[in-house]
Image 1 (cartoon, one colour):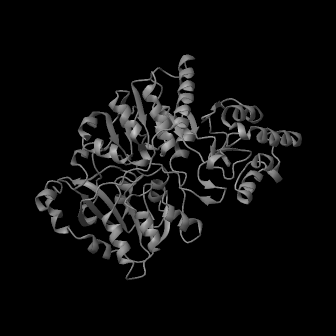
Image 2 (cartoon, rainbow, N blue to C red):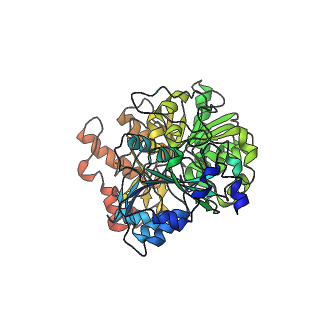
Image 3 (cartoon, rainbow, N blue to C red):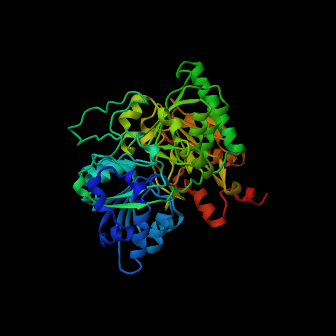
Length: 505
């Protein structure tokens, strides 16, 4: 193994810091705060967190865990089952951890993904005792080269008291040179971010860190976990067609150029499937400026539809992961990975004029969006980067199927049970029923547009009935407050949002 890692560990003064994952885990004590690399199951620290779980079987251990986003390799699940996490932020997507959060056994701070680095920089959060960062190499001058994600790794390494590097031999060293690490500096003293084109390179290929802080290097050999996205289906294909129809009209009237504007797509099966629909469109010479680069991005790159893609993480299905990672060199001139505070930065999003495509849990008849809380109280995954992009994009688009749970849940409701994105920030809603362009519409004008174009036919009559009653009460945004959440209450009581007559028909 020494000869193999010698090719990756090129700063020879660090060789005497190679330790086992058990030794590295032994340094972590109860009450500490950890910054773990990883963003949507990619580039995550794997070995040391696993060893930490084993350590917790022998001694009491509670730690705070900060990441970029969700972790792979079952790390979130294992930590939740072991009961070692006191506080978690800014995003997670594990069923077991979600249950712990919703039962009140774990604290969760749901943050905009561009905000975590700023909170760390301002010393708002607990100081990070150990940053544990996965890398493909360490350069001669001690620079840590990340693997398949950057996430918050650079700010973790900069601000942590100690750094542990997981040098993962399973990750291709061809990733070296695909990163662009840029440090913003303190607010009030920083310069404008010098990024004016999607393919601009403004930073370094790795994370510059005080070499004295690197306490240990753990040699690992474990690939990323594949994503859990599912292939496109008939509904998502229809949604893609609706979205492409909208974009085509924007080009026809001159609001968008023929190659559109830089695109962003949120994590998940629906957003990926809708993005995939661009394969069969006339649009080409596309650019992507996003946080997560999923299967559809690489399909579009392979088809020559995308000329450049910038993100902070590569998250792929099992088949696509092997295909892309085994041939990463063919994307070298068309791909960059950045820290998430750069990929999601409002300054850049507004400057580039992005088209953002994200997925909600539910929307209401005025265009408010709930991305995080099931029935208003139960955390799903977190807001992620959707707020970063929605508030600042040229076009903020949300795509979702109009119904869930075999039709017992309507994705369009009278009033969302939790508001993540207000009606002021949402431009377009898309379901398999059609799309609603909400730009320039007053609240009362939005209602029929959303109901007719986005709601499932099963629920349209109910939605109109609610609105007609609300209309009688008046107001800028009419509501029947005592009935605003009646649909959610009905679902909890009967298992369906449908009115009683419809449930029995």
